[in-house]
Length: 174
Image (cartoon, rainbow, N blue to C red):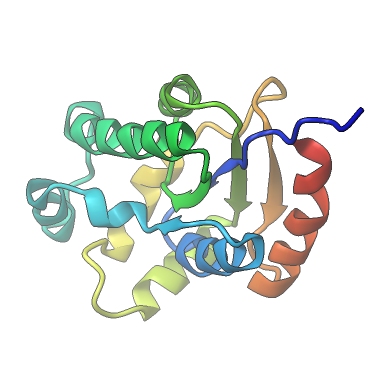
């Protein structure tokens, strides 16, 4: 008897600003042949403006953004196509929202020390998130719990090596 293939995963590439979510997420989506969503693209303009002015977002600010990301997960799950998306997903409650939105949601936490993250953010141009908000990200960060499906990796590794590691693990996970 043939086994029924499970639905493709929804991989949420998570971590603080500067951890490499966009780079790793795009590479992973390409490797897995899944659609890719840059989660920052769904931030309301008010959130972008607030962060650009040096003010951290609070849960109320993040709510419309998280709901938009959860809607993407629901659609990607319902269509059976799966996907890879980036989102800081700093809090357990946010990740719970994503798991409720779709089946096979799996988290890739790109963990990075604060000094390296701040240096990376300070060195990039054209992004609304200033380096001075990095501390607020670490203050809000709740690392993956043992009951959450996913993997934590060292974001100081090369994006290619991270993607290689995940590509070896995911087929066994689903």
